[in-house]
Amino acid sequence: MPPQQDPSLSDPTVWEQQLQIYAQELHDLYLEEKKYRQELAEDKLVLEYKLRELGALNKLFQQHLEHRQRVESAHQDLVAALRALLPKVGEVSLRQELERLLTQAEAAIIGPAREAPKEKP
Image (cartoon, rainbow, N blue to C red; front, side):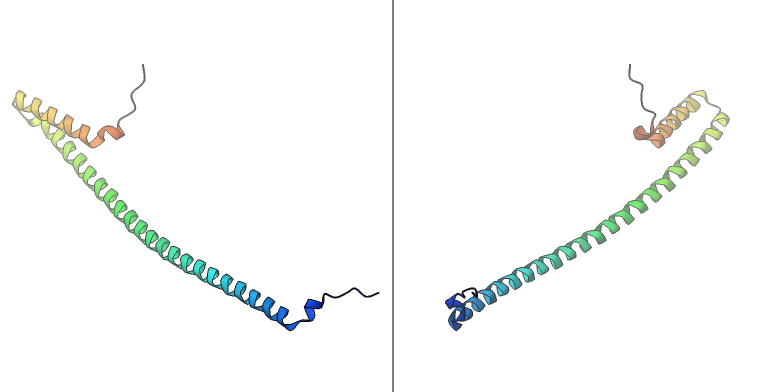
């Protein structure tokens, strides 16, 4: 005996209603995907902007580091040249004051971040 077929399946209005439901679901899915694609495109633009911004900040930081290295080197050269002249200063009080100033300048070059860590007691 052949399986019995649902009589409503042969009714064209049932097929039409089912097609309308599928069409609506397909349309809803299309709109949802379109929305996600737009959000993705916007997110991509934001990321590209942030990447350019990060690249610019990195370049600026690199330039700052290079400038700082040049300034530190010039500062160290100046302190060394002044130290070389120190013995030629005849007046003792002036020599002592220059020695104090040079020691301060050297400490500024080294800075607190570059000093050796102090041992804990």
